[in-house]
Image 1: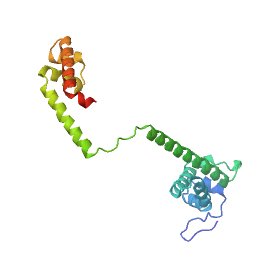
Image 2 (image 1 turned 120 degrees about the vertical axis):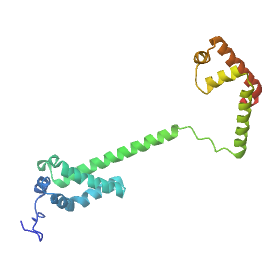
Image 3 (image 1 turned 90 degrees about the horizontal axis):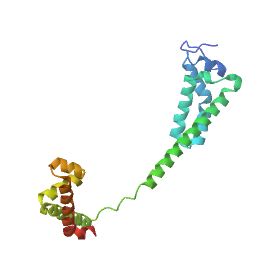
Image 4 (image 1 turned 90 degrees about the vertical axis):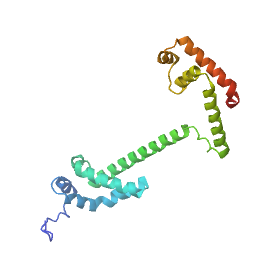
Length: 194
């Protein structure tokens, strides 16, 4: 082995197995392996993923995993090139499956969502405001006990039993207030319900 200009050892002629074994102690071994196999890994990743950014990310991931898990490569089972090819293919296909699964989930959610109503026209907005004024006025015109019972029921979400306890009135009285109030509102606002 020769020495390079900076005093470091030239390992460019070492076999793959030695370089993989040296990864833990010599980070430059990863660079040499990348020089040998980077274009192979990237080319395969790009062919499968068809996206340059994803292929670059996967290439980096493959070489980092080689550095972190160099014991996974067994020279008795095949060459480093074959190992990297298999690993790249497997992970690229996993990424495709994961991506297509996410797309399917998003598409299903989008199709299941109810269609958004069309935007309100100025006429719709004016009608809505006018109806709101009429509802507020109709509520204000109710006797205070009926108005209070309906407000607690519809705006506060209380049950009739909770309203009875809250206002200190018998349950039957609260039920009567609610019924009379609703009948009065129906008489005054019936055209809005249609």
